[in-house]
Structure formats: structure tokens, C-alpha cells
Length: 275
Ligand SMILES: [Zn+2]
Ligand SMILES: [Zn+2]
Image (cartoon, rainbow, N blue to C red; front, side, top):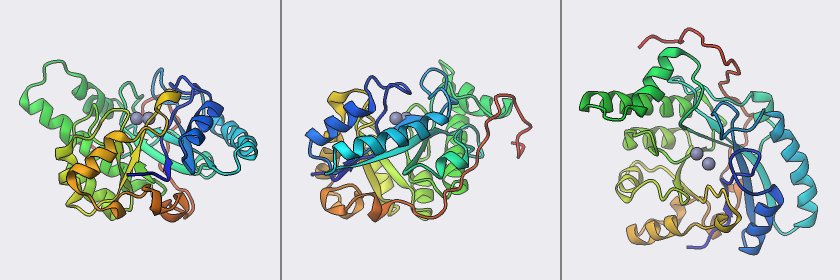
């Protein structure tokens, strides 16, 4: 399968090892028509951007790079961190409004909005030897957080690597994505999700996007994992929004006013709902 663009990459402003220009150059060399730089939101320790003003600086830099690469469209987005069971994100609406696309995912070491959410999501998932009951509790919490992120953030374009590090009910997450026109990511940087999850997700009617999640120039536009899954499963190309003939983000991205749930607080609040 050939691709129109790669919509998930990281620069050194979060945890990538490459500049924006290096990402753009690599994408151009590989013949992509669109490339998105999508650094991690600030609320994940170590991997996040210093603060959200970085995204606005990236937008300005992208506009300059765009002049040097007129044949390719350069997009700036973000991979926001899901911070709790309500799907609260870590990027404010006034920044999201300026972005070209919005990804959200669950990541280790995220700062939760409440102690209870931290227990349900990050502590449960990090137990070294969880029993069956604890694994199940973690799966239920992870699924709830992803579905809430999909339902409560109408601007969300993509859920990144669903189930990676945080096991989820794939069918339930894919159904929510399908209902809210959020794309279910096939992540080639992590070779995730496994084929069995794609089979399950496919049955819900959800649409997929195949991204590199590149942190290095070498892997920008490397979408072989997704490509081979499509082949093995005989997936209809129409289900993969970024296949070469599918058009760019203008064809499938969300265009309505960008709205999201947001909390910038590093202190804990009372959870909105008790669980
Ligand atoms: Zn991620
Ligand atoms: Zn990523």
C-alpha cells in the first residue's frame, strides 16, 4: 500500500531525536504529500513538551519550512495525554484551535488530575504481578478513559496506539471511535495493535490511520507494519484514511471548532464522578 502522508511524528521538543526540518526533509525524500509533527503534551514526565507555547512556535516554523517545501503540506498537531477517567487532555483549547490535528493516547508517567484517577490508571497498570482481578480492573479503567476521551473531545482526530502499555476492550474502544469519527491508529513505531485487535476493530466499521510515530529520521514515513496488515487481512483501502488515493487531511480531518476537555492543574482535584 502507498500512503498520502504520515500523521504522527516527534521532534526533539518532546522525546524525538530530530528537528522539525529533519522530519520534513525525510518525509519529502520518501515522497509523502503531507507530514505532521505531533509532539507529546506537557503532562507526561520526561517525554512531554516543556509547555504548550511550543506548539505555537512550531506553527510559525512550519510556515517558514512550507516555503522551502512547496510540494508537501506540513502540519503541526499534538499527541495529548489522557489524564483521567473522564478523558481530560493536557492541551488547552486556545492551543488546540491553532493546531492542524489532534491525537490523544494513554502514556506511562502521566500526571493524573486526581489521586483516584492516578490509582485507577497508572498504579493499576504498573503492578508488576497483577492478579486476574487487578488486570481486569485496569482494563476496565483504561477502556473507560479512552472512550471518555473520544466522547468528550469532539475535536479529536486520532486515538494513538490503542491498547499499548494499557490493555483495553478493543471492540468497545473501536465502537466509540466509529460513532464519533475518531480514527483508530495502527502504529508502526510500536508494531501495534496486533493483528487480532485489528480484526476485532475492523468489524465495528471504524476507520484506521497508519502512522510511523517516528522519533528518528530513519523511520519517518515507515509504514510497513500497517501495510503488511492490510495485505494479510485483505482490508479495503477505503478503511485506511491515509492510503495514497484517499486524499490528505482535508478529506478526513475534523473541521469544526476545536473543543476539548482540559486541565492544566498539577494539583489534584476531586474526581468529577466517584467510582
Ligand atoms: Zn504515544
Ligand atoms: Zn507518539
